Image (tube, rainbow, N blue to C red):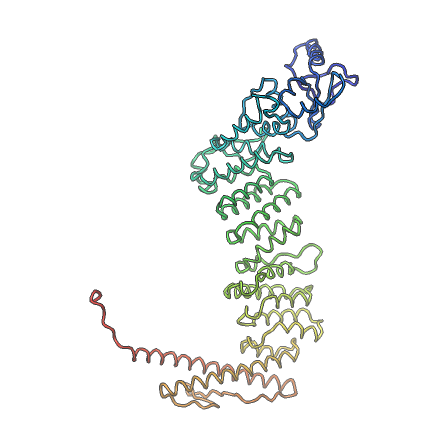
Length: 578
């Protein structure tokens, strides 16, 4: 078998101009070899447009069922035939290995470095028992694959690296799956740092070994026992990484280790390459992280990959996956995480729409799926975020209102933070109409205002007067409920300890000062100034009433403890304890 390069045959079908025989030392020898090739070889094979081979039809067809069937159907007595393959797996290198097997009477040294090409070529050319009898390339490669579990780690990596070149071709996935399963099994069962060469990047030979340049001690210091294989797998393409990760998930591999490797892979591979390659890497990493347990994924790393993804214009599907993972762990976020600049073309400073999508993902399963602690943490974070974006003069009222009302009312114990954020927003957006201001104030729950916040609101001219009235009414309701609680507490104390009766209109505290308790109906004045003065008086009474309730609750707690201790009878200790 000899090989000529594509395009070197003469136009008249005469002798070939150039051969890959042993290099002749004289031009006359080269002409003789060209004439011998033209006489002896009767089949020309074009492999994927890469190279053209001159072979003996009878020798090749004896082992290849595909060619044997093709020649059996051909008619005529033409001496020279040409076969064109457009999808030969492994290309010219694979065809040459297969041809050597045929010219060597069905014998070839099968190694991890060529088994992928040989196996794929044997499948493609139908080199089975029905044609070749005892010499069967497909059977020989299958036997070698059964010994894969005994291969060295470096041999597995070499075989997988070769399989990587066969991925576009059919019938190459079977051997690739076997290699990947064996590789993952080796990673899962290994408890020591890599004892074999480490492959860090492909070079001209496809593999670079680093055992000679790395001592065992430095390797142990660089990688933990669970992650020694991280650098070795950097040679894999995104398609192969996807296969490896899915196999790891099926084999119950630790999801924390998987997620760490994916982030390591993404950071290492994205330093170089074009934007399209980086986008493919980031999208693959997002797809693989999405199938893991989200609680095992580093929240900090998710935000890191988000910032990278925002610059690469990843697909909407991958963006939604990433936002869902971040939103589900929103209680772990910080203010710095959320302060993401708005995309190009947007006027406002920060990406408010992105944060709203995070909140939507956080509440996706319903309020019942979120613990009260998580809800309060997110609410506190959002109060800080809203206060940060409120001074943005380009932030529309609809977006600001959406932020303030994104969480349910039960998420906040106090609305002081939202009030101060709205105060800043109204201070910057002075052109808002009264109707727009009222709409924004709908986000407030005045019953969860502190007394100081109510007083500040009553004096705040930026807010509509309707808000001051609503705050005053809510405080009236709060005052009535506090008075009722105070009366119940007073009656309990009187009946249990004989404490002197507290009047419904006032009491003397320990310092002898009188605290006024007001529970009558409010007669709201018509003038705004009178309304503010009345509100301030009411707030003073509420604050004093809260002090009374706190003191009474403290007294009641002390008395209950004393009563429990006085009614309890001493119990004798067991003999073993005495």
